[in-house]
Image 1 (cartoon, rainbow, N blue to C red):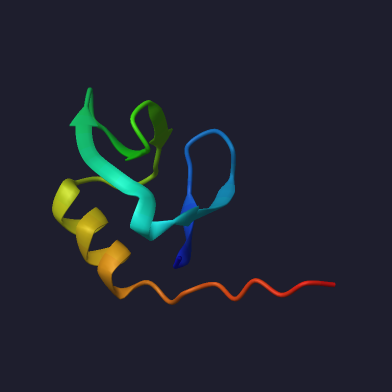
Image 2: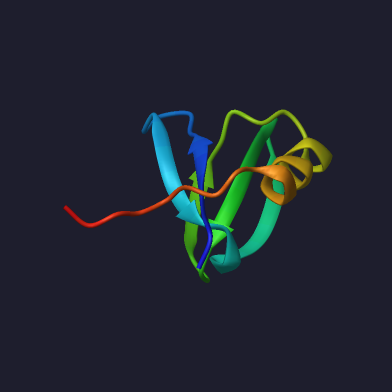
Length: 66
């Protein structure tokens, strides 16, 4: 599991499991990342190529137990 940070349009910053991304779609000028079959996350990305590039290059977030 590799978590990365994504800036969303309405929920602020979110950590998502990059391995769980199923689809990236642009609709009405908004790029959506789908995690699982039905969870769409509206992002601040402007196009699909930049979204894919970010996901591939993004630094993983360390999750540590407290």
